[in-house]
Length: 231
View 1 (cartoon, helix red, strand yellow):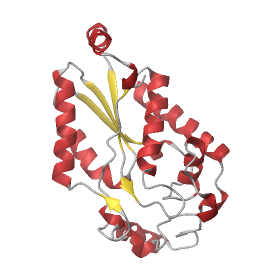
View 2: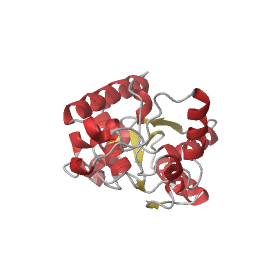
View 3: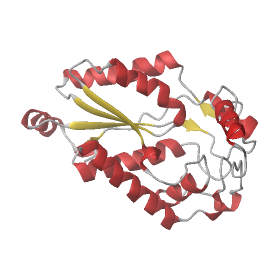
View 4: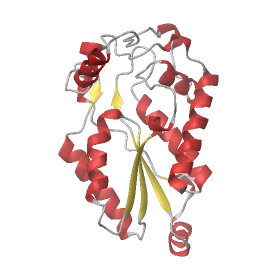
């Protein structure tokens, strides 16, 4: 269920009648090469949250579309600072708790958000709020990427904004030593580090992406996420 389908009297009645789980999707606004919109992370996590909510009878709240993406500088990104990001999410969680909602899932759609979200989850371990956080790409077998085959396929399945004619191969780590891959991974997460390893803003090869593959990825992610959330 999407929160846009709810109205105050019915929502308050739902909260009183049974324990509700709220999904808060968190994305980012950042470059995704020349072929994907800057809203890609937020678009994908919004779709995953909606499908997960329907499957598990949870309630999907609006996506927090601004994350921490300073690793993409000087390519485009709109980033919050860590303190502001933490305080904002914590205030949303506290507000939900005041409304008697104690089961909350933060569904993450951007790698740079992970340290803050995990810290928030850890800080609430001993509270009466059951907060769980998941990054959706951890629930698929295929190696993830940035504006590569996976993200482009998923976007083809959910959006008409993909410009496949502009899709170009970016950084490919196949054939590199483990040491070199580790070095690249570390550099890519530092402020301004991503363009140093992926000059066109793409990690992977989006040129073979298809809508069919995107639907398969989405189904796999939602299926595995649902199992984890309901376990």
